[in-house]
Image (cartoon, rainbow, N blue to C red):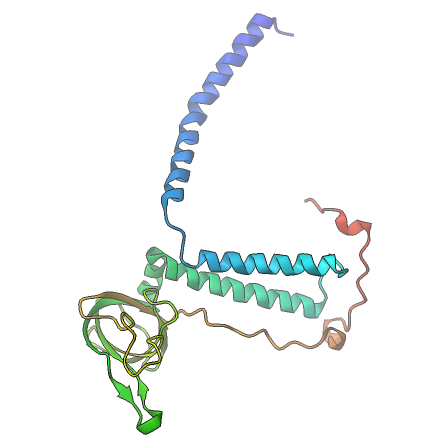
Length: 246
């Protein structure tokens, strides 16, 4: 065993050596945290938080009312249902992330799934149909330098006006003609601010997070034999509380 004085000196040298290596990274880490905290949260964050909180509250309420906890392994139908929910949630998150962050949306602009440009002309009171079937369909002309690989008739959304929908009418020589179909009010004229004005910078994309219904799956008791047939009734036991570690 080393003498206390030598041992103490060794510890101090090792401590100092580690400090010179770790302290700069530690300071930069907190600098990054401060920068992130200064950024405004995405517009979709609150909605996702409410959804996650609602899902957890519903699960906790079901367990409190006597429902069994989550089984260790899902049956075929339950697994397919869970996978479908997770895929829908992932798809919605990717769309919301692009709507919230222009840098993420830039990736879709490069692939032609979105475009940004300047409004050069509008017809806010353009209508279609006759008589009672007449509908307000404002027309917007956008000049863009982005590659637009969307077909006429495609439904588009915009991060600038959440909840609004437009239809792609025509693309020619960097000019995109759009027809707004949703989100401009219910009056005979558009609600103030609902139609982009000439000179405004806008972005439109085929990415939408519209509601998607659950996949059509059979009842648990109708699980086909190809997937093991109806699963046995789940009975929780003490082993369910044991964690499996790799």
